[in-house]
Picture (cartoon, one colour):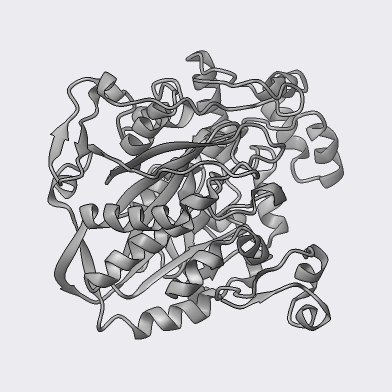
Length: 472
């Protein structure tokens, strides 16, 4: 692996963004690939590829959830990370993949592994950080897939920049095994070419008509493996399989966390043809749903009282009159930060999961993160949980994953609305849960007490109350 401390010679090879962002620490010189390059490779490599076969017990029970205990044994170093665990994470990834996938006779196509490779702050520049799906675990999965003939494999991520992935040491894990990473976080919507995207129509969406995905995601012959990690989130409370799929959507369309009153203006600013892809009456649709969920007693539902202030300003009729006047809109939106943000986020997230429908969803919960999703203020820490959660349905997978984290998925906003929309079950008592043991045996969980819980709470207040931990 080539390394480079960023000096004069190295700076010449970096773009302006990277020059401005670089630090003195050495980091991997790899940089991933663009969507167009990756698409050419994928298209040229289909002939010799074999699809993986999902374990029959999983495939034949699409609403069931399967738990596999892992055996990583490591201690934290002075940085607070389980740095010594990376070889074990790789071997566990391969072992888990052997339990989930076997060789098939079906030729062609490609496989895309969607990790959670988001932004990481400087103190989390470590390949075992709980902020990320473990890149070493993914390498182990890829090793087994290649062993069974599934060789046309890509990974990728939108939003976060390539330099952050380098600093987070993803390429330290990927490069020695030639695991490709598509750096799809282009700066603007207009940077994505038409041939770089696939479009899929939504079903019963309150918000949008169509959703774009960067290739090879949503190719007709693509096998999508969704590998998230185990942590909390300021918008979703827990961020698992469903939220991880946001990273399949190109920037400009992919900011699911944009509040209700910023979605249209932000999309237009990016150059998105809003009327073509979003419902004209999405405002009323989402507000009606928000009010219904407020009446149902959703916890902490009106973010910092934004909706109450919106009502005091005249509500929809007042907003409608100013929404196309930039100056008047800015004045109206003052002190309305987070307006109906959770409602629009969960509706878009559920639409996206229902549209994409991965072949399998896997929560890599070997190292979980307590506190909040990025550990920005060193609130919370990595914890060794040693569990993998898998299943066909992301709704049941996330319900069980959230329960393991100490949360009640019957109260979590997105799992609760998933059940309301008929997408999946959120009551862990009503979900069929199984252990896949080390010897390959499959055992049904008869009582939830058989499943160990690992409290991973959410810090909502951050600097105001760093000791706060919320459990829904």
